[in-house]
Length: 288
Image (cartoon, rainbow, N blue to C red; front, side, top):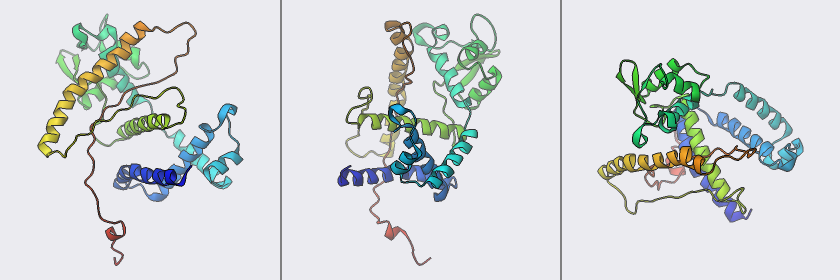
């Protein structure tokens, strides 16, 4: 890698890490804990992403690729196994799958693509049957209570429920919300990594950015946010319906055709932090 590209990569990584570090410091995660996590990520990528057709990479190659010693690899491997054993469950994804099914499953969509109100139990459709189709490993009562908690459903009759949100989003920084954050940011970085390869693995993945030409007032930002909630939501619903229904009907899966590609689309409004002209050394009071 040319020196100028390596320097630019280092600067970009530092910029990328700063909002993540802000979360870590806010939640009490120290540098040494982050360093151990970074080591695990280096180990996992070196072992799985650079193994080639052999599927397994040698310990010697991993040490050479990462700059880690054998002892560091073994320590990091133990930490990785400990993390895997205590990893977050699938509950958050299950709640999201139920909401997604409610808005996209043909059996649960009424005229004009609007999801129908559902009784908790009953035939031929009900919330219980919806859960059994999209998240059968969790009790329907558990999922309903969680969707009520985050304001994703509302009661419109005697034990009859209406979805008012299409996505499962935690209202605060919780373990589930952090899992969602990791999934969203990881997906974005995976797209950028693919698109910056000399030869992308499959093809260039869709990636576009819109930048507001001039700085906004707070009132203008709130109005833009309101506009995006309507227009952006409609756009995502159209893409979601196309992927869930039209695409599968136009290009049905052939016999023995593998279907192992998981894909999605992210849209979000970003706000850049104020320009910080203070030098790092000037931000530190060395006399205290």
